[in-house]
Image 1: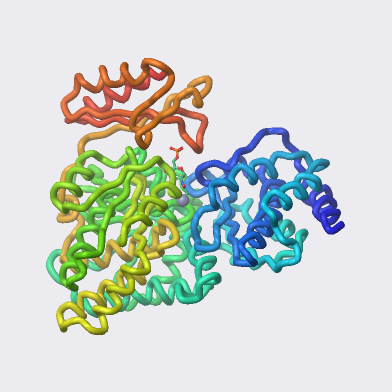
Image 2: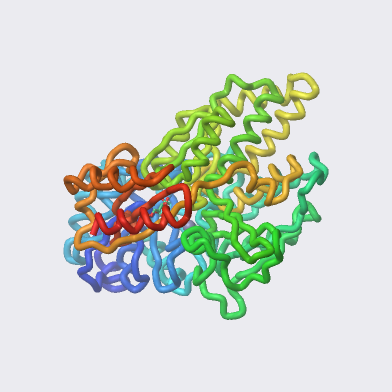
Amino acid sequence: SSLRVVYAFAREMHPKTTDVFIQYGTAGFRTKASLLEHVVYRMGLLAVLRSRVKNGRTIGIMITASHNLEPDNGVKLVDPDGEMLEQSWEEIATRLANVSDNDLESTTAEIIKQVNSDMALKASVYIGMDTRYTSPRLAAAAVHGVMALKGTPKEFGIVTTPMLHFCVKCRNDNTYGTPTEEGYYEKIVGAFKNISQKLPVVGNYNTTLYVDGANGVGGKKLNIIKKSLDGELDLVLFNLGGNGGKLNLNCGADFVKVSQKPPVGIEHVPFQRVASLDGDGDRLIYYYVDDKNEIHLLDGDQIAILLASYITELLKSCGAQELRLGLVQTAYANGASTRYITQELKVPVTCVKTGVKHLHHAALSYDIGIYFEANGHGTVVYSKEAKNVVRKIAEEGEAEQRKAAQLLLNFIDVTNETVGDAISDLFLVESVLRARGLDVRDWAALYRDVPCRQLKVTVQDRNVISTTDAERQCTSPEGLQTKINELVSKYPSGRSFVRASGTEDVVRVYSEADTQESADKLAAEVAQAVF
Ligand code: 16G
Ligand code: ZN
């Protein structure tokens, strides 16, 4: 049968050489690159089955380990509308990744039956990769997997993760855009230029923006974009991967957010705003360094608030207040941000479990849903109905309403609605700062974060920790939550929670309190209680 090919290919070219069990986690498979070749080959197979189950619509495979260091790599699947792989398939992916080469043929046959994949249909798979030196080899394994089951692979080479999501979406829905890297620039950067032409530079806004590219793919793409910007934004790019700069090493959005330190490789100027991307270009954190060399972060919470308040204003100006705008956060959102959003902006907030798929899903229940993790991953999603309402006003409204609606349509086009996107988010933030004449200090002054601390604790088995209430309460081990409550009650404005990491073999501890010292102390005490 044709499955013989699958088996022979696997044996000869991408054999399973390790017995280490690997799981499709929050962000796909992620581990040492040397352990991944057979996994990626098999994801090539699975993507073909998935494409056929979806009637031949295109599926994506992205090779990346995001903000992890260079020796790691990873792979994740992208569903037809550019979303993360449907959760029920994660188990199937895990099963296929872990069977022996001897059982691969029979397991593949079982899965074909289980998911009812019609092998007579065409299948299309888009494959992208980040800048890691191990990525081309893994992308080749994905191509082989796709071909083994007679799917059609298309390689995009080095692209950001969100670019691949965008291209998959466009391929399956041509109203969204053109499924190429150029199509991405045309839509997203083109819309930003439109906004800039409508909005003169006012107030404290300054068009100079420094960028920390994390020595990954995002900075490289901004370098391409930079050449097409005509003074709308003056990008000064650092950490582009040259000069011995190492991917994500002491730089990038995750480093800046977790360590609360400025990255290496940048000549800092006091009060100059800096945008820091992660290694695959799907997270964005802003910051500035003051004249005492102290860092001030503007993380996912602040980005969400900036976008929410501007969209609210535009909705009002175009007379479309009936559209329901809401914000989605996780337990990591700073308490001050949640208070500001609900009390000052009067925008409803939903809190969900960590992981983009949970946030994205919850955001879809609003007409306009904004979701951000504090770590800088997020975007805005607009319902069809919302887009129609705004389009109609842009055509038929009164002069002022029309103007606001047209601006909002541009704003929607800058947005990569499929997934959090550092480049798209950067242009959204710059649009709002420009529209409002804000510099980075004005933005930071909207509200003050409660001091917080994150710690990780290594335990024998992190899975003994289970949680409920969007990870804010812990249900096991018994007694732990009572203990946390006791510790928290000693601190004014205290808050703390623990959860098992989905990407590392650790338990994470988060705390907030009225002073940094207290937040640090509370985190340490809770960590002690976990241990
Ligand atoms: C993954 C998630 C990210 C989440 C992080 C938490 C996706 C695409 N990425 O990177 O959203 O914040 O995991 O990691 O879902 P943790 O479970 O180790 O804390
Ligand atoms: Zn990432």
